[in-house]
Image (cartoon, rainbow, N blue to C red; front, side, top):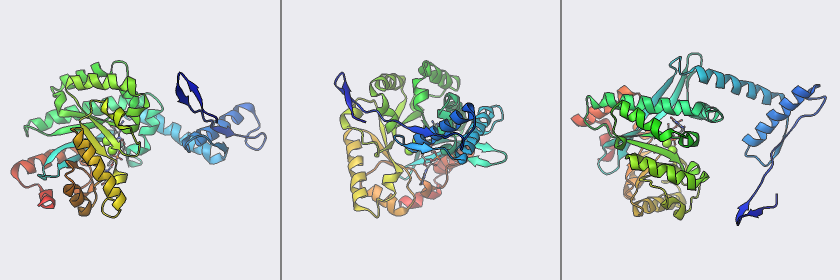
Length: 330
Ligand code: C2E
Ligand code: MG
Ligand code: MG
């Protein structure tokens, strides 16, 4: 547990341990190791740096995970993935300024599964790369379709996982998709979480510079809980800061959170970034965000994330001045 230094960097190592005992947990080596491994997985999932004893439920969870993984692999051929859009509103004008693309998985026997229940599993394998690419393709296809009816469908943001970003030919692939649908890179924004950004920041800066040079907008997602240093933040070509919903949740009831969000908004503006507040659920939160001149907001206050067709309807309603959410901004 004692930290040590390599080339003046502080290194901290932790150990996670999974324990299975013979003969209670298994009477042969293969099962014993498999069960210890299930316990180890559990230990890592609980945050690591702990030990866990094997329990039969752990194997059930592991079997469930494996099944999910194999079903997810087939989800493409079966056309089970879909993208929903969550509009972003300009807090000053009440206009829809764009949307965030959010992937969903619709399984016939289970209904719609949210990303929290399958993205982590996809991230354990290269499946996340395929899913991410499918989402980008779908978003460009939808964008192209919207453009037939509305001249500017706004800027659409797509979530990116670290594995996707690290893919060797990622830049070529994303360029090819955009070119294929004739979607301008300036119409898209890539969202990268604060923790992803900080993971290997030197390498990431280079990649992001290349994406930025293409004309893509870049956003830092779920900003706040990761406590990034300002100097680290400044190296990235980021134009949008998205405040994590855990901070937005209490702005109208907790003075501390209100101060924190106010400070983040100000900091973003000083760095010439657009600031988006995520997870806006109440009018009180909306009013507070307006009072501190936050630029954009998204959240359930404006309804659930919607299908591509419904987003187009919303854009058309806006064009005709009949967007029902306008009243919230009056
Ligand atoms: P995120 O990028 O921070 O997306 C915002 C999440 O907050 C979405 O959850 C959205 O439905 C939810 N949300 C929006 N408004 C509210 C609100 O007012 N209150 C609350 N409590 N929640 C709200 P969702 O769709 O379940 O997605 C969860 C996460 O999964 C996303 O977080 C994103 O990190 C990831 N994700 C979604 N789509 C993709 C994708 O295509 N690729 C990758 N790599 N990750 C994705
Ligand atoms: Mg996001
Ligand atoms: Mg977010």
